[in-house]
Amino acid sequence: MNSEQIIASLKDLMATGDAPGKVLTDPADLDTYGKDWTKIYPPKPLAIALPKTTEQVQALVKFANENQVALVPSGGRTGLSAGAVAANGEVVVAFDNMNQILDFNASDRTVRCEAGVVTEQLQNCAEDNGLYYPVDFASAGSSQLGGNLSTNAGGIKVIRYGMSRDWVAGLKVVTGKGDILDLNKDLEKNNTGYDLRHLFIGAEGTLGFITEATMKLSRKPDNLTVLVLGLNDLTNTMDVLQTFQKKIDLTAYEFFSHQAMGHVLAHGQVQAPFETEAPYYALLEFESVSDQVMDDAMALFEQCVENGWVLDGVISQSETQAQNLWQLRERISESIAPRTPYKNDISVVVSKVPGFLQEIDAVVTEHYPDFEIIWFGHIGDGNLHLNILKPEDMANEDFFEKCQQVNKWVFEIVERYQGSVSAEHGVGMTKKPYLQYTRSEAEIAYLRGIKQVFDPNGIMNPGKIFD
Image (cartoon, rainbow, N blue to C red; front, side):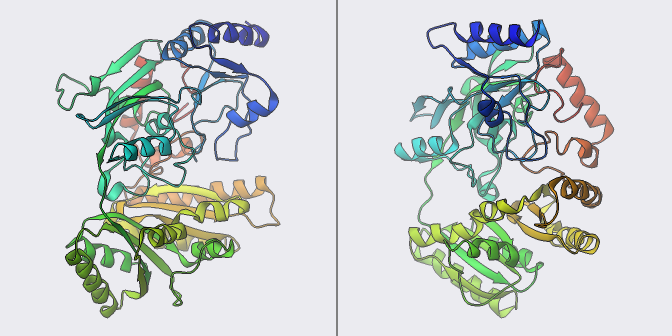
C-alpha cells in the first residue's frame, strides 16, 4: 500500500461513527503535529489522524497492524525527549479532539477525562467542584493528560503529592494489538493480579494508546504561602530542606541558580525578590493554615540565617504575591528558549543532590568554558534540570554534536550516583542511547519482552525507549 492509499484509507476510517475524526496532510500541520519541544529531529510524518472516539483509535491501530504502518501519539507536544516526534514517515495520532471531561463523581472525588484534556482544564474542573488536582507544571496550559500519563509527568508538587501515576483511578487503553482494555474500573482496592495501569503509565505510547483516564482529586490546599530564600552555597539547599521539613509539610521545594534568575529578570516581567544577590535560590511553598505555622516558618527562616545558610529571603503576604514569586521559577524555561538550550532532565536520591550537581557542573564547565550553564529544578524530590545554552555564533548542528559528548560525561556521573537519565520527560529518542546508564541489561530485556506482548508488530511509537 503506497502513501496515497494509506492516506485515503485513513480518511475512510476517520469518517466512521457519529463523531467523524479528521486526517491532515498540509505541510504546516505535518510540522506542527510531528514534533514536540525538542529541536534535534526534523518532523517528517506521513499524515495526522485526529480521532474523536476510542473506537476510531482502535480502528487506526488495527489498520496499522494489517498494513505495517507506524503510529506516533501526540498530546500537547510539550515533551523534551522527542517521544512524540514523527521523523520517519509515521502516522501521527493526535488527541486534540478527544478533549472532553466526561464525568465528575463527588462521592468518589474522581473525574473521568479523555486523553486530550489539557492539564489546566482538569485543574479548573477540580476547582469548580471545590477540589484540587495537584499535578502541576509550567506547561499546564498546553500539556495533555494522555501525554502526562504516558511520561508519568511530575512537576512542582511531587514532594507533597507524588507523580501523575499516583492520581490514576482507572485507564481505558487501546493496546498495540488493537484491544480495548478498561483497567481497574476506578476501584480503590483491587488486588486481582498485575495492575496493568502502571505498565501503560510511563510507556510513552509504545505499548498502546491511553484514550481515557479517571483521575483522583484531593481537597484544596489552604492559604498557600511562598518563601524565596537566597542561599550561601549549594549544599545549603539540603540544610534548609531538612530544617523546614522537621516542622512543616512542604507542598513544593524548588531551586534555581543566579544565572537562571538573571535570564528571567532580563525579560522585565518579574522583579528580583530582594536586593541581596546569592549564588542559588530556594523556593518553598506550604499551607499556612494558622498563625502557629507562620510563626514556625519565620523561626525556621531565622535559624537558617543564623547558621549562615541563608543570605536573605522574602515571604508572600497574599495569593498575588505568591504567584509573582512563583514566576521567578516558572519563567525560566521561556526566558532561555531563544538560546536553543540543550536540556537534561536527571535525578538522584535527594540527599545526593549537592555533590551530584557540583560534579556535573565542574565537568561541563571544564570542557566547555564558553557554554553558559543554567541550573534549576525540583530539588525537593531530587530532580534537576541541566540546561546548556548555545553560543550565538555556533551553528545548531555543531552545538548538538558537542552536547552529545557532554551527555556521556553527565550520564557516567548519573550512573555512579545510581540516578536516572530521565526524571520526568521519558526516554523518547534523545535518551534512548543512554538507557543503560539507569537500567540494567536484564531490566531492558524484560522491557523488550513486555513490548512484544502488547505490540508484537512493533507499530506503536517505534524507535522510542529502545530500537
